[in-house]
Length: 203
Ligand code: 5GP
Ligand code: MG
Image (cartoon, rainbow, N blue to C red; front, side, top):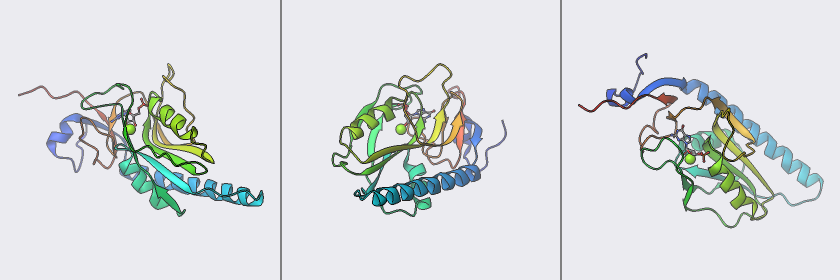
């Protein structure tokens, strides 16, 4: 393993391989932000042409994992929007496999007629985004889209197949940290996405 610059040795003990570097993330997130904005513009023009109301754009970032991604994404989106974060959890504490989704708070209940974009860090089993899409669609928004930083490829299929309109990167089926993603609450501040290694032996 190469030395990871800018990471203290305690962090480097766990973080094994940088999968997606800082510059590559910046370029791709900017590109996806612009793409989403163009699609929203096109949708507005089409609704206006048909004489239909144009719903407000509401971003729904899934905390805490989407914190870093959404803050970069919105700065590449020159679109009038409001931001309504929700808190869901499926990997509590030191879990590295999904423990089932729990809604911890904040799912907006006034999305009727809105153009909603859910923003999450990663599509894994699909349970989180499947649940959120259902909760939002039940409110009859004008449209719902989902944007994720990462899509984990699952050769054997997901627990729930979810349509994701925008995905920045595809990765293999392994546990990753950084750029918002945590292990036991840590590593979210790494500026890149990295695969986790073995936990160090105590002592
Ligand atoms: P899903 O419901 O699709 O299984 O999982 C989605 C959530 O689990 C993500 O929003 C993310 O918070 C967490 N998660 C899934 N895979 C990983 C991973 O490889 N690393 C980290 N840190 N969190 C993950
Ligand atoms: Mg999450």
